[in-house]
Length: 311
Image (cartoon, rainbow, N blue to C red; front, side, top):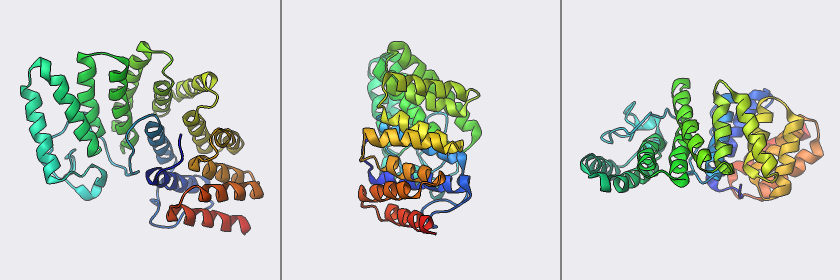
């Protein structure tokens, strides 16, 4: 995982709010995080980070339901479930984007078998642009079905995994998680050593009936690649979620040893150290996180955490 972009920092702050409520000890400034975020959101945001770092499309941390397939683009949101762009700002499309999507959908429906995959690829890219990842996954799956390959299956799987990470309802989360797992299984059938696919598959299992399998997959990746930043990060987040702060310290310490410029790693190392009453070390980690980013919201959050350590 590389050093954080502004998008990455925003996700970090959302996660921080989830941790605050999980611990019941502090809260970030209002306006940065939603006041009712909890452990489910913590896992979702971890999944988003996993997707981003695995080559997925960066997101802005918004939360909305995802759909199971392509939807018409006539409404203010490409999904069109609620018809209210204010409720799903990250799926909002301009009138020009909606028109372009509708034109492409019509072209796809009338395309010959030879041309359909090319149109589907273009459609998927356009849906991804407006962050309609479920629709992107639908069309990428048609491409992979027509021309199976490790890369094609992973592109479809990554799109569904991104949609899964944003799903607000348990029903949609299960549906999209099932689809992502199905597609990642195809990736791994083509290449059992695809560690990125195995990592995302592991995270997709965390909201299934078999989260233990997800942990097992993440540990398998770490055995093959002990310096895998994405796995270290996600195992650290899962440790925090289960209140295993000593284990979280271990994971985030490993992460920042691999990449000292990892902002999320430094921040959550500070959180974990603070939870285990190691104030001086926590302060050092928070200061390091602050030094790695010029994001003012992150700086304000770090200052609040430092103030609590002084109390």
